[in-house]
Length: 75
Image 1: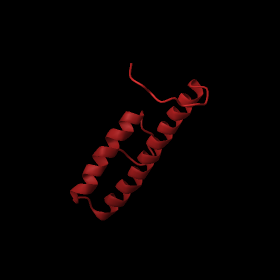
Image 2: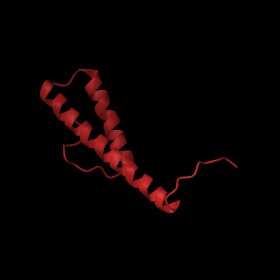
Image 3: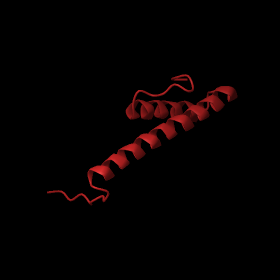
Image 4: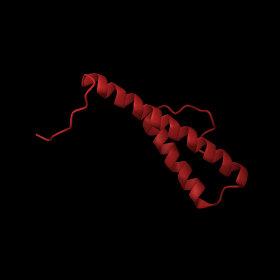
């Protein structure tokens, strides 16, 4: 496993990279059942971490745009 469960990733990018590695390991079908379960739990933690980070950024954007998201139009 790339990291022990309950370790907080350093960043969104680090969490995403670890999640991609984990998915690769799980999809390989070479993990024993116990490690598979641990990997699945860690994947769920990483997914929640990424969702929380994205939600926080979305909230910051809403505040910066005074509560109203505006469609982006290229100049």
